[in-house]
Length: 328
Length: 272
Ligand SMILES: Nc1ncnc2c1ncn2[C@@H]1O[C@H](COP(=O)(O)OP(=O)(O)OP(=O)(O)O)[C@@H](O)[C@H]1O
Ligand SMILES: [Mg+2]
Image (cartoon, rainbow over all chains, first blue to last red):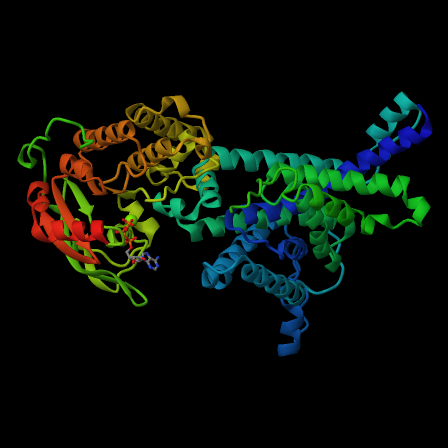
């Protein structure tokens, strides 16, 4: 096979893998948007916050250490113990559930029946708050996240492709894990929403608030539930991205990549979030590969938005979004 | 007359119990509009209680007060012998008061079966954790509830659309699915807001039969808003008549029909 095609194939595979990570973030958006019609600007920061908290628990960091030291003249930094990864993940999840409860209590409850734009603004506020809060709680330095996921070149794939094509593909093992995790997440979310009582309640709320109330569903309880699930998805995304790039402020910006993904996939479709992520991932890698050299590179920064824009022109509801029917 | 035909057995022959629901001096205002003005009435266990009146009389508002969607400024609701504190709609539903809406509120994206299953959400016990840990038990529970729902589907003769997304059904069937969902909750009281509005004669007759059967077979107490006088006469044990937010008559259908104030209210509308 000609080298160029093999090379393009490798780029495509890598794009798919990168796309999975975009999908993970987009998934969090879709969950909240479907259930409550809120575009949660804070989803990216939630991923950052979850990753920070996870590292903090793992390494036995004292929360608010800087603040405590300044206020009391102490010099505490670490508790002196480390927490096993699984325990740290469970503890972080507990923190995300508490966050969901607080968001419902302090933000959503007061804004019931407000216009979507107001709720959107509230989540922008939430994003900035959570960003600052994460800094104060765990410090602003870049942290390494190590949860025992494999990383680096997958030798199996390298060897196999070399044997077949005489050209070894470079695929990061972390990306493979991310793809598997994303698949498992989507399957379990689907099972949950199709076959459990709370899943059915969640779909009901997403469909019609009034009807949901009439069959005895508490909207507020469901909102806590969705924000908790979105917190869980943020944790997964935070772990994947954090392992890849280190836990740092720029993690929260991956949310911006989720935006074109959502425009492609539709704001209300879980499969849409996945497919959209893959398209963006593959698209931007291939575009960079094919067109990048001609225009001086760095196309990955804007390609996704351009693609989304083109899409908006032809299919504003996204690939899988509900048809927008104008009532006249 | 579009009703079922033969006359109902007299109230005494059926098991009609003491008052299960009492509305006492309910007043409900929206800004300057008084939708309900100091109205009291009761609903007895096992009966079919109709609320009638011209457009804008406040009938739906009354149903919304009972189901917790509206909160009256004044008055008390007594349910099963106790004064009810201010409840949210979902809490009312959990106490066993199910309802349908004048403008149909179904889950458009879900299948008929799923819609009706949501009616049973409150009867399902397992918590989220339990559902995850004991998948088998959750599944058995689901199967048991499915069985009940299938019986309701048979009862309302909607087997042929079980898997159809509700959004695609014609209006008359939607109304029927909404009734099915409410019945699935096995409610103590069933509130029906114009269940036959917009139906053709045949559909109306079916609906009448379902309502009577639900009342007979499950002993469900029913509060019903309906415009069609024939239907009301056939179905109901007692009737509350409202006009401009006030109660102008209350009693068995045959007395109410000949009531001067009622005739005037209806004629007034006809001429207005
Ligand atoms: N949510 C609301 N906000 C403001 N006004 C309302 C609201 N709901 C009802 N009203 C007013 O209360 C009055 C009674 O309305 P309601 O819907 O209860 O009448 P109805 O008897 O059900 O009429 P119809 O036969 O047309 O259904 C009307 O004047 C209506 O405009
Ligand atoms: Mg009405």
